[in-house]
Length: 93
Image (tube, rainbow, N blue to C red):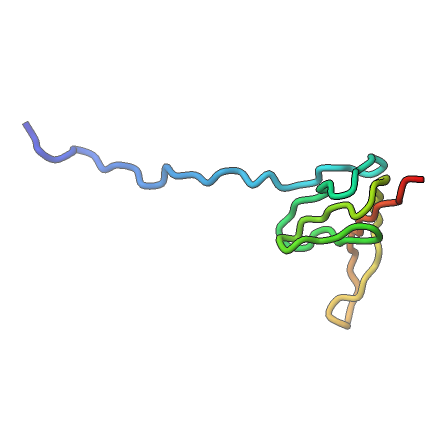
């Protein structure tokens, strides 16, 4: 009987847990104050009016209201233009 395994074992079977990124509340939906609107890595989306951005780039509602997505042109590196999606929350009356 052999005392050593005949074939090598695989070393790439580990996997990390999912990070659950993405948009949680879409446009024209209501969000309560403190609700997470988007979880992201980097600033794919930017915080607009009544929305704040956390240290891990999570955007959340500052007030209760309707979520609004808006695409705007922004300056890029002081030279050209690019588009950026701003997320704002219109306060409920």
